[in-house]
Length: 132
Image (cartoon, rainbow, N blue to C red):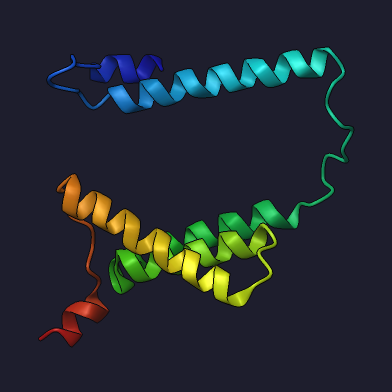
């Protein structure tokens, strides 16, 4: 949040680059305080600390693959793969739901960022080569 303040928050008419990170920091702080209070009250379920260590490692590996393939495959295909990995890690059993949701996430976020917010995302070398 301090770093976001350094970027500037802007005002209602003209938001600055620090606005969204600052807002995210407020949300994370509020959720952390909520969890801390619940833990002090003893309302959390006991868990083994490293009970499911494969899940975070799989998500981290998916993110590394995503970064490596983003410029090559393009945003939509790389995001579909990452979404599929994450949904599978969180036990989505149905293959068709996993595929549909992954496509929806990739296409939906592409339309949001590229179309609505005018943030150009990588098309990828594969699609660029095919379109020539």
